[in-house]
Length: 86
Image (cartoon, rainbow, N blue to C red; front, top):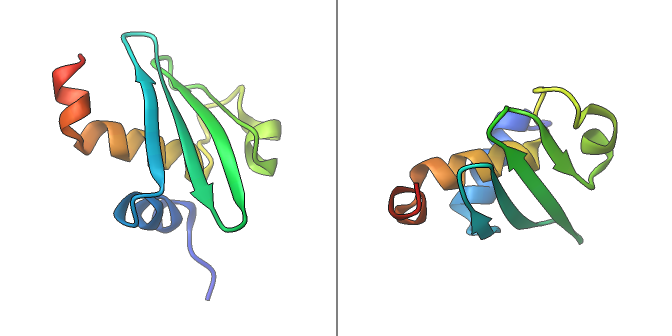
């Protein structure tokens, strides 16, 4: 059975595969280990994102987040890092 993007994002967060490297009022930058790849992901406050995965390369100009960008959002929203650096 294939996971939805939301399920994949939750799994990445739960497994500790999301490493936030920068968080400020404009964006959150993270590295995500997914499968055999590491993805560089930027989630902008506007709702747009950048991710070097296949989905991100075609949809990054939209707010239709890939699993990696959604994982960054979940990790930032749920972490003490997020609360301390708002």
